Length: 229
Length: 229
DNA sequence: TGGTTACTGGAACGACGTTCCAGAAGGGAT
DNA sequence: ATCCCTTCTGGAACGTCGTTCCAGTAACCA
Image (cartoon, rainbow over all chains, first blue to last red; front, side, top):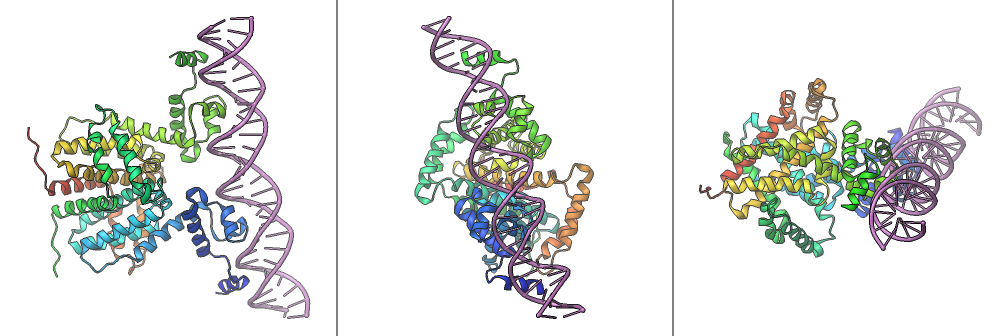
């Protein structure tokens, strides 16, 4: 308390872990993954690189904290009072939209051994699976399958999306991708060639949710005891 | 051909794109992601950094080529003459084991707009889905769901696994993880606490395959037309 | 034989993550 | 009031990285 008070009084805009993370997020959003450097961060915070290291161990910890914050905010905004299925879709969409808005966060969340952000998602999904009546033995497998899919597909979508600017060139991007698939070798890639035209009217979000529903259908098909209420 | 011949005659161990990629893979396997530097690569190839740049555009292309090679080799080894379900499990396990053996490759494959390695997996899975009788409209969604799950969970598993050395300390790693989950706040993380004990007898591969089966069950539950043969 | 092309490798550049340290600013003890 | 001690600052410096540049070498072609 004496510590925090002293820090707060040193400068009215005193440096703190939270302020550094927030500045890092702004920098990452504005300039992309390569935009976050300790020099740029120090300039934005009007300080030196050494001062930042007093509050943050290294760049890895800073990136982890930034992506955890992104997921934390997304999870704070999801509704949890609908049916379990709808709530799971809401959680999934929360992650999807968060990574779409902050594409740099996706790479960091798969990385690292079970960070806080992913634990939050796992926890929330697990609770809904319990409410769905998934037997205890199957709960971990089910939750982990959903989480892997959610982060895998969201990250994939985010990194694809960050290459084109916005909805403007989105159709163009899909068109180029479709053309490239259609130009693949006919013997080696018959399947990709056959579905390439569908790429042009592709709705990322709808496609993503359809994947969630496939997994939910798979869980419903497995033996489960219905919830008593 | 004149070009290739000239290159081959310059030195019996002439530099080439393939030789560089192979050396990069060896370096990545031996030293991890941070071990691949152009200096270390030049030393291993007994040349200078500039010579490498004649064959490779930049580090990103080199990493992409290396991870594509890992997936390519894995796909070359999977059996495709069993039932569609079994073949899909074989493809999934091929990716899983490849990323487990080369943990650095996982991060690179999610990244980048649809690289060759992932396209190969998508193609092979798509063909099996066609054989399963999945209707054409649903094929892309189904294939993309499976691929996202496969790479998402495999990458997750690989990065977790690379922190401990091998099966020796694997149980220890799981024990520490379980203890950490059990120590979480009881109000905020009731689900994680409840399943933490299961973590101690956790079989990654079996768990991964169970996830694949959930998705396959979900596909089977959706309307489909049976294959006529 | 002379020039052209294909390729080599080492030196150099700028930027990065990180460390180091001299010092400022306040609080508590004397 | 004075001193120290902890907390915190910020700029300089170090080593390493990806990448570029370029002088040089060997095979081929006219």
